[in-house]
Image 1 (cartoon, rainbow, N blue to C red):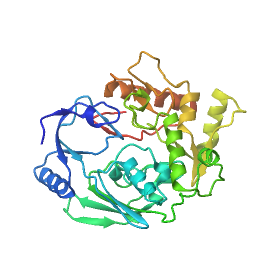
Image 2: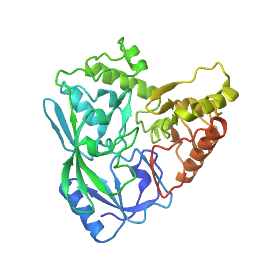
Image 3: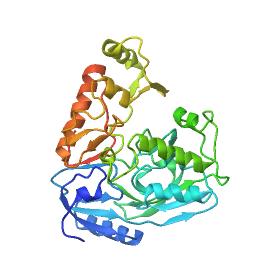
Length: 347
């Protein structure tokens, strides 16, 4: 274990106070460390890529276990990645080997182990649709076992693993397409850029290249020189409004934006999904809000990302999140839910 280090060094938002860190480069050391800390009653915070965390400026009053396992096993129609493996490197490995399926999830920062926790998704593909099984350490019993997707309670950007300390992800197995074709293209912008129709497939390699291009244009590919990427990605999930409230929300939007304005929505079971980015911008929070001098502000490329311009604190980012959420609620009667996991921070 190290002396206390600033957790800002371990997160893509680059905020977070000090904590003692134990780095685990093997699954065996990861399991042994978590078991020992649990037996001693010491609080544990698990960090791998640190891409979905907002950690308090006061740090963490326990031990941060840094998951640094990196192993990847590739088969004809499957890939097994250890929890700490860099996610985009995992995708790149599968595409370079002529396998398809993961390419639409290119460029997403973080680790392989985090992908099932929040059911990571992008460009019409979610991890839940690709997952074969997840290897978990049950912290209550000490048991290690492979778990089927049906046990993980997947939903939109969530699973039973999110906001829970019950288990540690050790490895993840994904189904691949051995012919090298992409997952069916379910996102209109991506399909159009590739000259395809929605639902068609294309070779995985050019799909990956286009996904990376689209993500980079929105500040969603990590670049140390670009403060628009000092973020946790999309900070709010697209809100799902129950059918019984849709008319009320649409009336509020019409009152503030205009009755003839097209509102980006998608039908989902039991309701309608609205675009969080569209709502944020129409509520008065433009790209770069609140201005060039603010240390914490919305990305200049993408209103869904809250960014650290180099000197922001967790408290400043949290206040910006509260301001945006309150503004959207007041104008459109919609409560935005944050996507990142918060540690010692209340939104």
